[in-house]
Length: 105
Image 1 (spheres, helix red, strand yellow):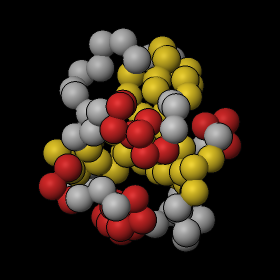
Image 2: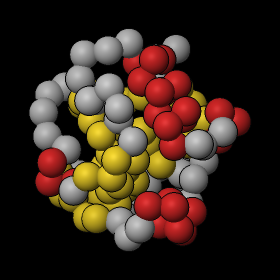
Image 3: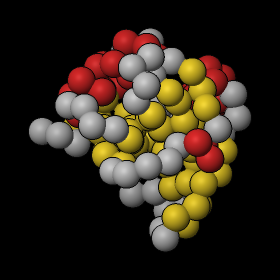
Image 4: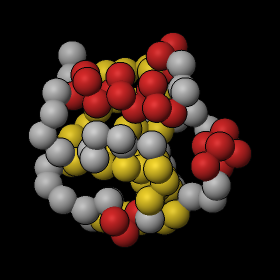
């Protein structure tokens, strides 16, 4: 798994994979400072990655008024969503008990 620039996290569809109980401080300690991306909802803290399979994944969180604590895992690509979650967890070393909600169940 390689950290990429958020500007390289492009493509459709962006699939909601899961919510993870992670803080910005934990993620920054592991992968460096966040980037800010924008969409129609406003600014997002973003950490983007390329998985070994070539799938692009990102941990994102609204900067203001996030509806839930933690981060959303989203991905670009055509692969089974549960496989992407397992691939991300394995490559990142994040434990599965940090997943608070799965978007594909």
